[in-house]
Length: 230
Ligand SMILES: C[S@@+](CC[C@H](N)C(=O)[O-])C[C@H]1O[C@@H](n2cnc3c(N)ncnc32)[C@H](O)[C@@H]1O
Image 1 (cartoon, rainbow, N blue to C red):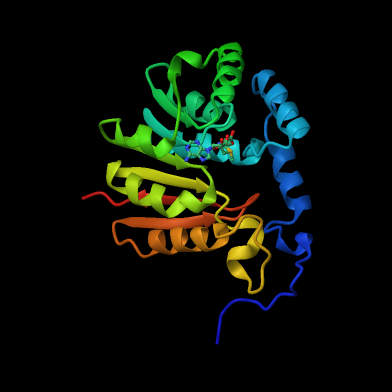
Image 2 (cartoon, helix red, strand yellow):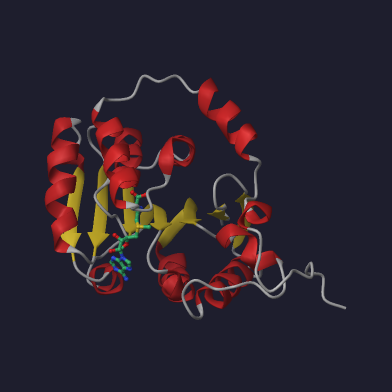
């Protein structure tokens, strides 16, 4: 028998929010609101344009994860206009570097404007184009690879990134619970094949003996996989 819950054809979206919104509000209110004012402007733009940024809770989590492994070189697949990169850039410090990749060229200009205002642009190497192509053309290992591209490409990105993460380094991907669709039968997919791709991605990671993995269920689910040290 399937271990997935049976769900009605049309799912109640509230049912699919992994963590109760009241709990997330509580967590959010605990955060010190000491971040740069430009962050609010980036959040306002996301709200206005319905653009999927990770938000402050996940952003804080990303920063802490990066600091925990002393990350100095980070590769980001799918940077939008630099909101998640803001958190990584804070974490890597003045000598560190975040390589951002983004398919939409217009987002690069916005990222430069915001991250310059936040005094973080000199830590960013922002490249417009397909993340997969840019990654293949970039040498070396990374302390942390972060995946937030179109979900259909999640398995491909994992397979590319996993061999280029240094021992003890992290692979992190957003939206791995996909509003709970990964856990229920009869979900309604927003984009054809995306849920299946996320399910495959998550299984590949949890089946990989070279990594230890865990899903933090906040917001839409964030997977963290740590490459085992030799
Ligand atoms: C969810 S948004 C990223 C949000 C960003 N990580 C944040 O939290 O601020 C996904 C972005 O990835 C871009 N994208 C999707 N697939 C991509 C790919 N294969 N290569 C490069 N960019 C891609 C989209 O244009 C979009 O801006």
